[in-house]
Length: 314
Image 1: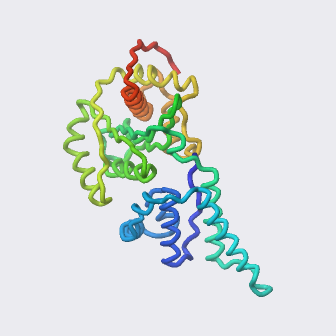
Image 2: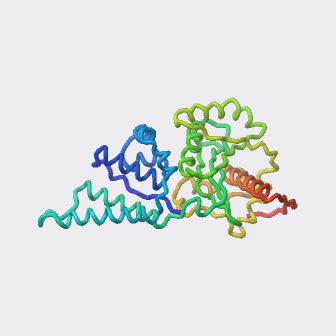
Image 3: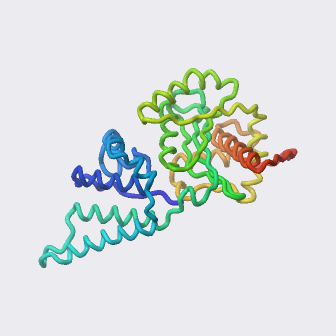
């Protein structure tokens, strides 16, 4: 999997050019609206209005154009621009700043699409699992809020996207919508850890907050509470995740390795031990998601397995 890497050089584009580029990115790259806003140099509200007024969600859902056709069209656009430049008078055969910006963006999009492996191609089932923490602060404390997009195919479990930070409850809920925009067209379950201590926050804070933010986005994330009674955190993380880590079947998205959130996740993984007193909220959340993936797959197969967990350390 690879992430789109386009430098924001679109300030010289006019409104219609920005709208056209935003539409292409929305329909073909499936990036969050806030990221599209940064790329094209428009506000999130403007992107949201274009999406709604132009019914881009419906267009994307009904899009049947193949990857090959998309690439072919982009190459044709580049060829046409190059031909126009070549046919100019001597001394004028160079791209304008707007043309140069456009060519850079098309080239970047081509590179991304040619090397991209879509979520649907590497997973047969996806879930989102979240640890909400009880803090509503972006000031550092012992707890991190975590939202993780995970997928399973065969023996492999993929950590596709992760958010892990000290942040507000509002931003925590927005993470769900960022991930939702990445998995358009896929069936995804959204889970939130909801133990006895967390339940008052879930009922009185998060359900109303998801409702309010959902109104702004035009749809609600169908969250589910994970009320499983969980054993000791280290024992649970080690028992569930040590085998796939050791066997190489728990796979972190290489394209996210420079993302500070994913770096925090990896850092917490390397810190797991019986004596470690710091935060391991990310491994805890991934264990929760891994367990639910196991349960879903076994339920589909009509089989359940029971085994005693051995004690192993990383």
